[in-house]
Structure formats: structure tokens, C-alpha cells
Image (cartoon, rainbow, N blue to C red; front, side, top):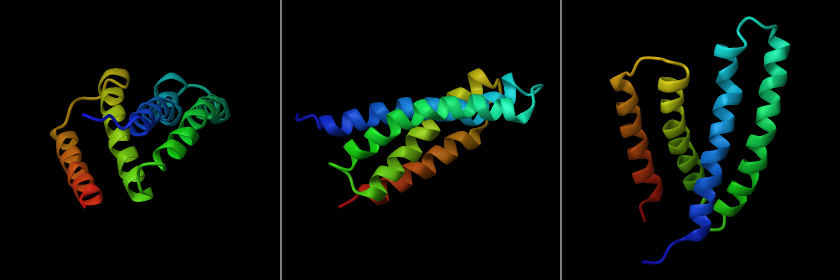
Length: 116
């Protein structure tokens, strides 16, 4: 089996990028809700800096082996994979079956965008 190392590197970097992105977008809703919005914005921007340090090379590496639509759908799948545990364990939101159905819809998007 031949491993597509650029794709593996892109997936790892996009996953790490999405962790920073998810915290930048949503962690302030739990941890900084009593603070002024501008403090939350500075916190989020500081996390977004690290997101971009990972996302930009991930997309450049990903474009060596994927089309742009494939790269975008891959990123959306990774976003959901990162977001659901964040939602359940960090934000302490209850599980809903809709998370699974949304994942199934994304699997359909993956099928259509990656088929030959």
C-alpha cells in the first residue's frame, strides 16, 4: 500500500488548525461570557493566529494532491469531526442524533466530490 504523505500531512495540519479554529470561534462563549466582547475578540484573534499558521501550509500541501473542491469538503468533514467532541466534552452540550445525520450528509458530499 502506497501512502499519500502530502495528503496525510494536510489532514494532520487541517485537524490541528480546526482545533484552534473551534476554540477561537466558540470557547469564549463558555470561558469569557462575563468579559467585554473586545476581550473575547482579542482572545479569539490570538488563537486564530495559530489556526492560520497551520491552515495555510495545510491548504498548500493539500492542493498538491487534491482539487480545491475536494480540499474544501475534506476541511468540512474535519471541522465536524473536531466540533462534535468539542461540543460534547468542552461545551457540555447534550448529544443529538442530528450530529450523526449531519455526518452522514457530509459522507455523501465526500462520495460525490471524490468520485472519479
